[in-house]
Image 1: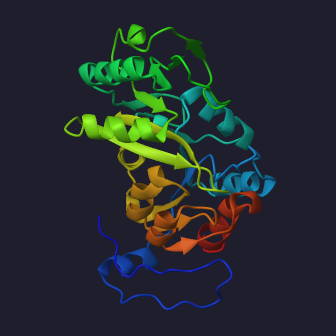
Image 2: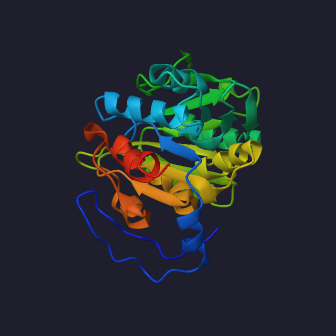
Amino acid sequence: MVKHGRERLHPDASTASPLPEGAGAAQRQTAPIAVVVSDVDGTLIDSEGRLPAENIEALQAVQERGLRVLLATIRKHDTANQIAEQLGIECGLVCEGGATAYDADGSLVRTVSLPLEVAMAIATLADDRGFPLATTVDAVNYFGPGYEPSLLFGAASFVETNRSVLTTSPTRMVIRSEDAVDFIARELAEAPLHIVRHYRAADRSFIDGVITHRDANKAAAVEALLDRWGLSWDVALAIGDAEADLGMIQQARIGVAMGNATPAIQAAADYISGLAAESGVAQAIQRFVLSSN
């Protein structure tokens, strides 16, 4: 879906000069938002892991109005569900960067795994070259030599070799070296891979690279849940801060970038909200949902 007449606003702006409008813009003006899609880390939650009370209240208000809420995250289902529990709402969950998707009742809607032979090639490169690699198989993370896990990973095990865990196809692989990510991207350029890189907002230093199947991305997984709910991108507000959020921000009726988002995300968005630490999600919801529904 191509959006027309994208309006670029900053949260402090009182007026705006939209680009020339087309049919898509007219549709956006008449169809009320029916679903709020939010990234988690760096968006709903700040860089210190804090979930602002204003964001909780805003998403609870969205649900109280009978609208859908969907969290789209790199986290696995267990740690993503912890956030949903903190919010105190029932919501859809897109996890592992789009490799898995769950309805609000917890039922699994979609799983897209890496081809086993491709995953084995990545694991072999990691073992032979000492790349710090984590592999997710059947919702369990396996940390290879040299990998230092974060608190986001949930259930996990440490292994002596990355190849040893590949008894079946994994849903994702995570690498903590930017050079290693670039090397794998070059070596496996023809493989059906989707690679996103994460950077710290403060200094843009590299965090990790997440590798999934080419079809396992947030936008595709969100669309699967929208289809299940009988909804479309035309009634979606999508909020994010990083490369993995680009597709859903581009396709949503209103795409919102956080104030701490990467330049590419801000350039693609219709609206730039406040920082994650300043409850930028709540600001966007108030502006585009609660004040107009």
